Image (cartoon, rainbow, N blue to C red):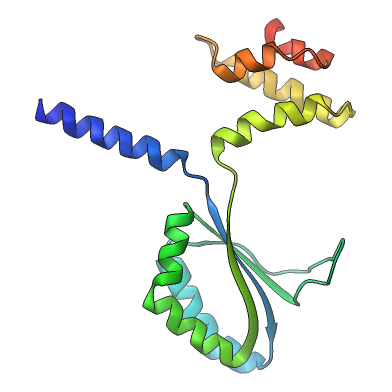
Amino acid sequence: MVTSAALGAATSETIHAQAMPPAYNIAEITIKDQDGYNKEYLPLITKATTDGGGRFIVRRGKTISYGGGAPAPRVVVVQFENLVKLQALYNSALYRDAIAVGDKYAAQRIFGVEGVSPQTALAKPFQDDCNNGSAALLDQVRLRSGLLRARRGPKTDLDRRHDACHCCGPCQLMGAL
């Protein structure tokens, strides 16, 4: 009985953790002292970020403005498992100490944003694709439809929702596969 309760709690915790979307730390940086930034700040912030579970997605790289004001000369994007992990980084002494050093060498705009959950990422594109008849999106609908129906077994809510969509021909692929 105790084993069943522990297993149920562990399963519930795992399902809850999987449902949380990833989070991203985004920093726009204008460096004032490149030497100090490289020697004193980068080692500290890199350690704080990786120790906090962050994975660098964008570091340096060319930035292009497509609208609004121009981005800062340096943009950094770091992915975290979820917003809770990102907030833990922001609250850590190691991170706060690193930022204090970084502020001496750069002007930084730093913020976090919650990403799209895996469940939303699978479900939402169908509605978007159905409302746009471009050939590329049509191919994506076909591909996704084939992948979703390739797994055998009972239909999911997503399968039923997509089967009920009558806005375009590709949506009917769900029933055909």
